[in-house]
Length: 87
Image 1 (cartoon, one colour):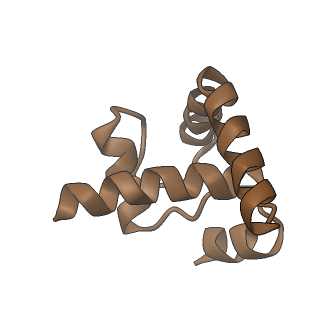
Image 2: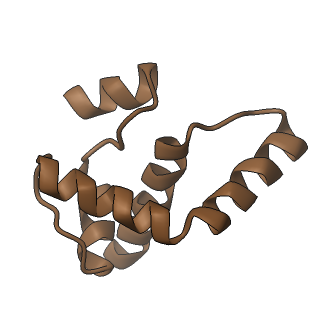
């Protein structure tokens, strides 16, 4: 619950909910609970894919006039993967 509040108010950390964690699992990234190492693994994934995240962030902002913080995009990415894996 704490991570959901931090994501919603500050946009500084993904919400470690069921689908987000399932998405991490699908991509082979450390998961299960928020810890320094697990968060650094998520940040590492972002850094390795920064250009793609930046492209999507700008496209959403240009089309919809909505700015999503980086960690919101990361949250949405892994949430979708987790959701699709559950289907």
